[in-house]
Length: 291
Image (cartoon, rainbow, N blue to C red; front, side, top):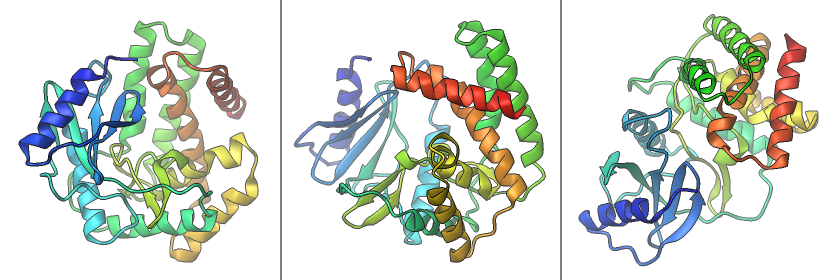
């Protein structure tokens, strides 16, 4: 784990420079991104992986623009903090931005609310006019395979499998309508709070079929856990709220999601636990079987 003192300093000095004095430093997450609670209401997200595949602040700029649009239209999202400029900021070499603190509650999210709140976000995002890349996480993952090859992080057969599934999925999904998406709508980016179910972490936002976000939120339930009831409730509530789901686009999105997650595993989890290694192998086996 990287030394966190310098990124903490980057966050605290940036807050002070904008008139906010931190009165605590609670570490909420320590990984490639460091998440810190600096005051009762202020949370900082600091990118620690400065040598990772993503460089600069362009992706933070997209996240901020989408998050502001969503919050302005009262979408169920965690908003940027109002007491600091939206940024993104960069200090001591670290990209960072600042968010409103919310209080999580210890209760499972209602699958029906997952589907309806995701549709609400999609609906509000339709008129968003900011510049977003098309199917970015898929194209980014294809490029990432070269890094994995150079670092010998996967055997050649696995790299071939991932490339095949990513390229074929990309070709298939290009045939469907695009709109702004969350981009990484897995359950970890959905927080049950005292003010309701809120979506967060919009850094992967891009243009693509809505089925990509739906595949992301149901993948574990549908494929890993075989919890078809939960997956069906999410999809049904999305439709009931007004959404339209194409079964072919959803099928290709489920494949693409497995390939994307597998490609990023060595980057996100350089020293994976046995449980994570088992999940990775499950995804790879599933992808190979589906070929």
